[in-house]
Image (cartoon, rainbow, N blue to C red):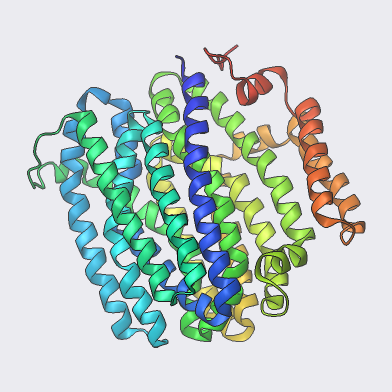
Length: 480
């Protein structure tokens, strides 16, 4: 099976894994917001984001690095796993100790502090699970991740429904989430150990000097690459309280769920692109161009729907009155989605072409911009100001990625078939804008149908159609 067919199969499997995660996460967060209100939802979101930040510290780029290293040297997978696992344990332990100190120094509600302590265990569970999944991605065996994700999240949804029926305290929701993450770790570790045949593990930091530069580049790039976006909620919680977090995150939690789609394409493309850059740079560039176009095609309709139907979506998900303040935030969130998707490929190109140091510098600068903007804007404008900070920081980092690949950005963006989806979105968007209050759900469905058909016919050439949509067994060669 060639790279194109493999990429297509991996994309489908990764999509299924992410779709299951999206469904379970969406039901959890929408349920908490709808039935517990903005204040408790704010506490829940604050604790969850803190755990996410410290998972990043625990991961420290080992997952992406191992995926790339294993993809390039599959026969040495066991050696690579052993080499990085000791470092992983060190960083995971450090992150766990750090998150335990947050409730001691954070001036917030007692509920938020309790939830932070409960979610702290996800630092270990999620971090190690991600590590074993990264091994499976490097070996291009995505189906194991899909199976484990399906089993664990199905069990989680059953427990979540039972908790909802019994109207359990919010702490039990957090405990259910953590227990199922522990189950996922057990399954992932068992499967990874069976595949590579690793009989024992020996703790060692041998090889640190040889790997130090790569580990630091990937680690700080991962942290800054997510921190510039994730930092907003802790600042908002500290400066404005749980209610402001609940309003802001009711809109931006939907953004996070949508961004999982970009993660799918990144995770499934990274092994193939890393391998192609080493062996066939021309095919690496062609696949990057098609990936960039795919990001654009996906993001345009989603961003438009978020902007035009902000009020309807917020009301439908969270009910009336409690979350009205999130409607203008939702409109800003639409532009965050567009910015992230359009720039994502150019960031991935830095990673797969051994320019991770440059990506690290861009995201570090973006984190600094976020810090300054939070301190200036949030005290004045609260949750709405946090949304302004989000778009500023994402535009800053996105421009950094684009300028780093300026020649490709100009050539690809001004292709006729690249501009067609943009024009289609603008025309259909104007139509929706004037019909926004008339059968809004049917309007979205009709818009998506028309958009897909017109983009398929006018926005994609024959080769791109075959690559993206074909299910032929042997795939389609990129260099045809």
